Image (cartoon, rainbow, N blue to C red; front, side, top):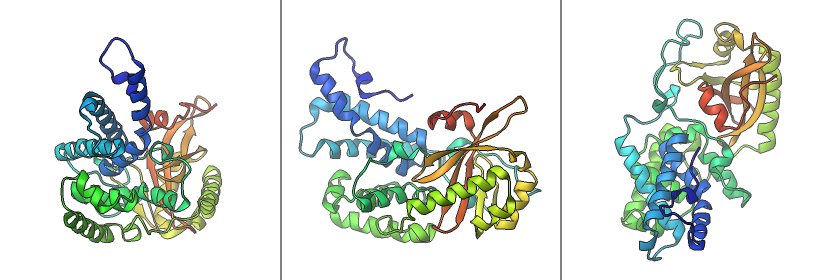
Length: 340
């Protein structure tokens, strides 16, 4: 579990000023986590980056001269921490759909397993998004942590990634972004233009986080409820009616991904048939409704199987992503390790 800012002190006693600084730094944890998650694509990498940011801020606070706001100063530290991580990373994080062609639903479905650092990871929505705010800002924030958008961000150079997030998602003025990155406004505008062009190719439906349409929450919730009902009944006909014709399914850490209703049905009735009898617990993940899947336990009850993210276009399910590292994800989402 991540430390709180009050855990970062070095002395034997906690003075009032220390407690006040701890509380002040803690107020930025969630938004910094969201920023670092978008930059890094990994939930636990983001935790580490925020912890390092708070530690550096704690150690150097006496040298903080107040020439910028505390928030801007923390974002500067966080940006440098993330840039350091990105510079030492073995490879950018991806989704299975970015690694090769779709698999055969029977012959190749579980052939290749890749390490955890290879994947864009899920994150609980309330760990990375602020509370109630302007509806337009909330819609932009939700779109900016969708799996497809975060995956597309990973194709940008680090500076372009930061510029796009700061300008389009967090709505910072170009002058403030230039000051944070020690560059010019012209350089910021140029980086933003190049980032938009890349995202238009990598995520054409999410190329501009500030204008991308956000499906209504009511529509998403209705789709989730109908999908869960069909899945728990294991009613493939009802489930197929909820899928868009070109829907995709993937299950990190497996490199396998499937495309099309028929292939998804074939997998669920073939290699995935042991999912029949599962129970589902709703969660909110990456700005969208999802669920935790528990498979039937021969010893009784149900055991954790995966965190499922459902992507949609407002009318149909367009993507089904199941993250299978249950020990890591179920505890992070505050889920029980067994259902009676």
